[in-house]
Length: 136
Image (cartoon, rainbow, N blue to C red; front, side):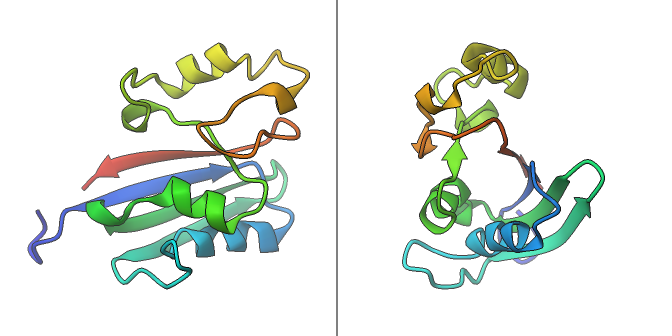
């Protein structure tokens, strides 16, 4: 618990996009909204870093542990978003990102539309958003 009585968590979202700023910003905004599209008071975007050359972005989010329903929020607010869970979110298996990608055939697969994501629509092509959550 923090000195304010909140249990905080940090989330790093790694996104395969940097050149289209509006997409990165829409994803960051979606992390701040509840299921009704209202701003969550205990969630904030701390930083957005985008690397144009590698077309990758990292969004750093801090929130109360109870408010990190991020995957569901992204699926609701970012059309076409696919979520594949790993680590602590991948219950009961708790597979690592590497294990999960191997299981999905992420780097060898040609037809991504046949994949069944944990949340959201099947991906149209290999691109992605991964997230790592850590209690503070």
